[in-house]
Each structure stands twice: as structure tokens, then as C-alpha cells.
Image (cartoon, rainbow, N blue to C red):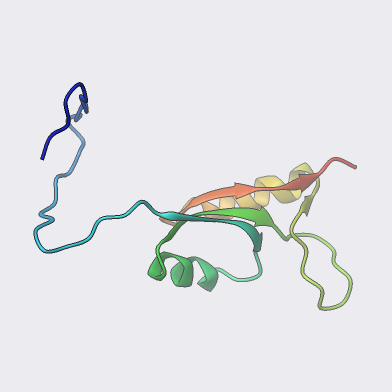
Length: 96
């Protein structure tokens, strides 16, 4: 079906897939992630989550997880480690 006054530009890198008999939905977002293991990404993708926002590197008290990442070194480490994953990732951090 088409909608009046709606134009979608499809670039040369766009891959069209057959959707007959399938249900297409937008991906979900989880905005409260404790990044504690890479396996979380596989589980999230399998459940339809395509964006994860949170933190969790650096010191924590005992077994308590954290949702913020302290300091620029830890943020850069998280960004570097995340490059190989097929997931939209955002990291929260502490300023002091």
C-alpha cells in the first residue's frame, strides 16, 4: 500500500527484503541497562530490542551493578568494545 504525500528515499545501499507473510515492527529500546556481559546483546536482539542505553564499567560496590560509567577512559573502552555488535548502544557516564 502507499500513502499520499509520503516519499521515502531509498539509497543505493538499501537492501530490500521480502515481507510477505511476516510482521514488521520497529525495534524496541531498553533505557536502563547494566552492561555486565556481552551475551545481553544477543538476548536483547532475540527479543526485538535494537537499542540499549546504560553503563556499568568501573568500580562498583561488591556485586552491585551500576548504570553509569565513571570517566572518559571507561567510556572510550565501552565504545571500543561495542564496535563489533549489531546493536545501537548509548552509554551513560558520571561527570565527577
